[in-house]
Length: 156
Ligand code: RTP
Image 1 (cartoon, helix red, strand yellow):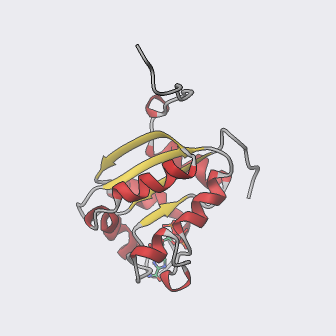
Image 2 (image 1 turned 90 degrees about the vertical axis):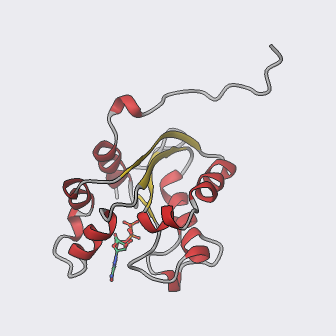
């Protein structure tokens, strides 16, 4: 839903507690970097109940909502990130893979690392509107870097 931006499009990508435990943080970052995306914010935190509930507010009426909030706030940190670049919202969803690991492409992150919908290791915004909301929820504007990558290597 909503409009898609091009090169400055941003998405909220979060490694969930089971992803942190499984030590896939480096691989996830590497996949997005090597695909060509720019990391504009990253932090490790244990989300409060309030934050987790608000993040998943659209699912509040679903039977699994309490368990979902408990999982996200279990005490193991999540890795909250903002990635930027062409089509990052749609590409991020493809790279993460389908919600149900049984339907996740084997080359996707979920398809490679998990087997259970209730422990599906990573989140990616599903639309422009949710990306905007989630970035605002998890990050202060000051935490988002606006930069042009410098040419490397530098001689001096
Ligand atoms: P996410 O928001 O985490 O990226 O997941 P999604 O859009 O692919 O899927 P969504 O339908 O929004 O569900 C959010 C998360 O809720 C958990 N879930 N558990 N036990 C269940 O049946 C069930 N269904 C969904 C998953 O962690 C899912 O990612």
